[in-house]
Image (cartoon, rainbow over all chains, first blue to last red; front, side, top):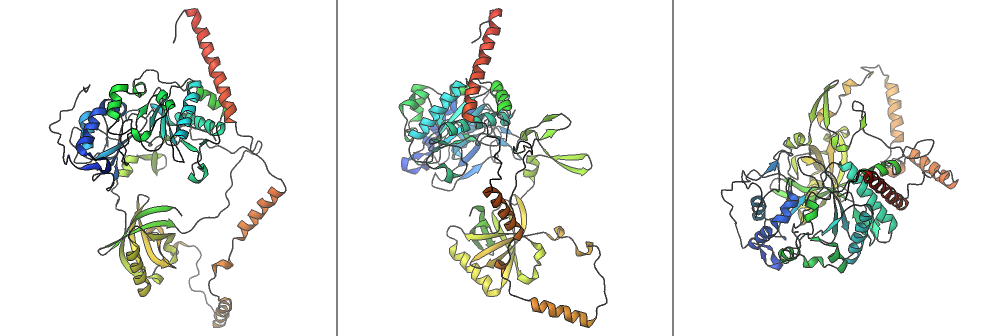
Length: 300
Length: 268
């Protein structure tokens, strides 16, 4: 099941298994931890080697919640950490760590785009955030972004944010700086905004966005994170940030149907649409695009 | 207004949830700097003179120059390791008279508004401070740094003034050329006092405006009216650029294929 060296885990105890984490869905901590077990392979494949920022909801999604970046002092010794911060950041590397965090009622797992060891982004990610209710508009923008990336020879993959939007990932050869990837992300976003001005905006001020989809290229940067694929969200209905195939997105998706109850079965029958993002194969080179942009679109 | 800080006023056993808003704003006219010949906004590059290349933000670290050319490097984690009081509270230490604080100590002013369920306690503190005419001296952690502050009543709100620490206020004894004990005639003193009394008036801040800023705005408006305007060179049209980029990528991949052919190497 779990490949690689498992840490020597003396004990892993589930406390308060009946605690309701998503009360109106009736999802208890036990069911939540079972969910984490069901999705651990594709989730960890993405997060392995990366630090994680958690959002913990000790009393369920309607209780007090807080962000946690540093590894707490009471964490078991086998929880892997990266000495990037004073106390060390948690590396979401293995199943015991994931389950231990589940027991801590960490409901959201946000990770950066690079592995802790090298600070080189492994994906260029664009966060598509609709300004008006409904999923059709953000779906359309994601498909336009895929087509644009495709014309530039860039592979693109998509997942729901678990909230209202979509996130598009372009796997990269891990040898660029965030300055490089940000330039390409900004170019793609600005292109969409200028080509489809009624549909897409890159305006940072919410008031300027109107009903358009905000293509957030600034969320891709050092120190920025997005929810890991298969991370649940602390929102009603226990939605999950779910990788999708472009075909199913073209047919139409209801993000509310992608939740803790449905995603494990989906994973069994459809597999993980994000597998190519983590495979190490087919990662894009940005060399030619960067050379072109350096010449033709000097940074302002 | 946008919240710059959120937390509690804490004194005695009472905690009052509050939000903080900047009370003042600069109105200086801002300029951008352009290249005089082509009128393009100037871009600043971070460049290492030793390595002779531009450096990215992630390649930059903080150094403290403890003597010329000698640095200690302070990383993000070093700074985070300094125990800062992470509590989000404005801890009231003393109540003092407003007149006791010399204006030199005042740095920046912020309005405080009551947070959720804090209205009653907020009103009570404000009322009590009005009744006693006292203002509070407090500590808080703001923008990751501990700060000294005064909390006072201003109109309908509580206001927080950040204060300079005493060692940040330069001593008046450092001012050169202060007269020690000049000989003054009573008559001269009387005349000067008389002059001051003639000019005495209530403080009406509306009377005072920034004449320079007004003149500058007028000058700018006039130049716009007279069409004395300079558009920046048209920013690159991103849509056209995308076309061009696709063309250039096609050309590159074509070259690669041609280059690969003679060697009978199959690439895919």
